[in-house]
Length: 530
Image 1 (cartoon, rainbow, N blue to C red):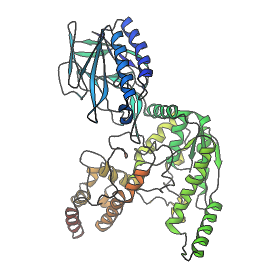
Image 2 (spheres, rainbow, N blue to C red; image 1 turned 45 degrees about the vertical axis):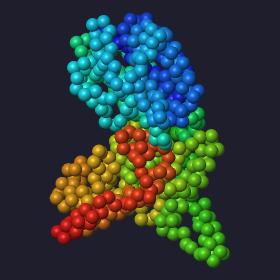
Image 3 (cartoon, helix red, strand yellow; image 1 turned 120 degrees about the horizontal axis):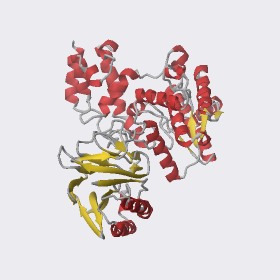
Image 4 (tube, rainbow, N blue to C red; image 1 turned 135 degrees about the vertical axis):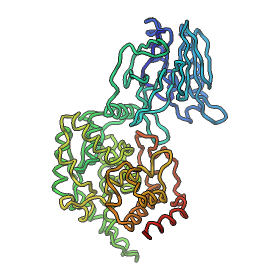
């Protein structure tokens, strides 16, 4: 049986545009001898938002488009669509053929000649019946396995879910191979002896290509211009700069280095080296003068009002971050008709290690679903891809916000996080079907099993005494379940690369920070009494 999968980029909420793309390819597939044509999931409406799905105009346009495709279908044509019923969204399988439209929420069995196959929306269980899975799941860092006898078909688009963006790579995949990733056109398959066999095998897409597709799609849809990026000389801003250069090209990216008296010569030089290696312009805008002016202004105003205060310590550190983002980057982005980036990683977002309205600001947070060690790995990929654009020394530089003398990288100082350990601890708190709570974290430390559970080579019992471990856990847990929740809610949109991206995870600011406090207190007493 000759089956053709159809690949084209979907535009959410635009049935007419999507149908024109589908119709051209449908006719070409039938002319080429296809006995069955599989369109991408949501081939007509795209991954439409609830507000658009509720529109009577959209519903009419979608239904008209489905009718036009059905009239043009000389062979079975398969897709699925989203429908609204009793204020709830549901997906239904659509089979179009010779003017008829068949809709079903359950498995559809098709018989074409001597061949039989099922069509499903849910991931199929092990079955000997050949199955087409209209897979609505987005791209993930870890690719889901495709069962035997199954052809999983994905759409090609970037999907907004609230303020979180998900990527769909448009692949058609079996247990052995995949085709069509990030590409348009037709892919031919043979259903032989219960298996789907591709006419031509292809190489899976590189992660850098997937990220580039997401950025280009967002830029095109939002009609964006320049990208302004704060380039500190650290790994996070460097990898984000490389990501945008690869996706948009050098002519659309402008780097800005905003040094203060706490900025080291090392990071200033690295920022210049990164910009030069990527071939992008670098603006140098010192912040000391404007920060000092703000301090004087606020201290004078409060003294005059009889409410004197001193801008010092953490308040002074956060003032620097807000000066960089709110004053410089936002103004430059507006003047250039563009946007500026947020360079946060998932480790920082977990505990809110960033300044609200400062470095937790920007149009997109493209690396906010990557842990710090994954940012380093991605930086190495981009450096190799772009001709060793990132200097080797940036990989060994201590991560630091450089907001005070206590964060001097040239003295080996930096962030209060020990990433070889905290990366994995926070991941265990956030990700997985059964994330660790605080009581379980202490219990695993006490039994010596925590490093294995976290998947880290760093044994916390060699790094912390029991009292230090408890204090460290309490510090970060309170932030994770406390103020960091508010910061995450107000953070820029995240590009989701896991099932546990912030923005997808339901969170509440008013929720009590402790889970099972009684069990935690008991574990704390047991640990400290050893």
